[in-house]
Length: 265
Image (tube, rainbow, N blue to C red; front, top):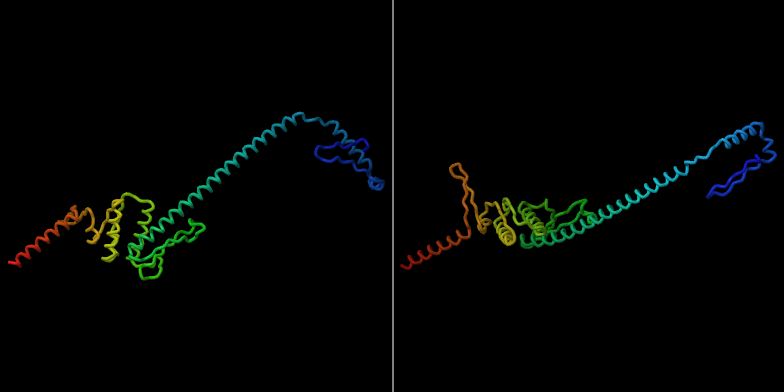
């Protein structure tokens, strides 16, 4: 045992071989076994040969490790860039949505008040913190009535509310051409006239093609195409309602003038 010694290892404090006391030595039942083990270990130490390729292998492993670390850093940086781009897009989406939502809400109020002559309408976010998760609530207050959800309205009130919302949406994102199919079917005579004149005002910036059976809707059109059936054949005729109205007024004036002359005679 006296021949053995411990060599220090880098970054570790040196250690000393333990020294056994007399009692510990006497506790060993068979000293020959210990002696044989020491001899065996010494023989193994002499037979050991240094691994000359360990340094080269270490350098290869270190180079591979540094390469993997660099790849990990690149992937981490790319992930951070994509994460930041994603957050920027989310913020942009929210900002653009809220800007459009406010414009549409204000225009909806204006349109509904104009169409109903005094009502009010409101768009509300169900979840103001995350407007994309729950949707939007559409409420209206018809003239001289309380606030109601749109699904609790009558047919005519739903039509006016829907038209006000449609026109508000297209005010934010206008299109040059609109097709509308019997939007006045559930409206009374007064509301048909209001909607007709409102749409006619919008024709300054867009073209409207409207299918209607209500005379106070199509009589103010710039062009009227009538569809009719005769002898089991569908035919059409194009007219200008305003020209017809002018001719009708002229003929009416001539007829009244003739009646007045006859009465004078």
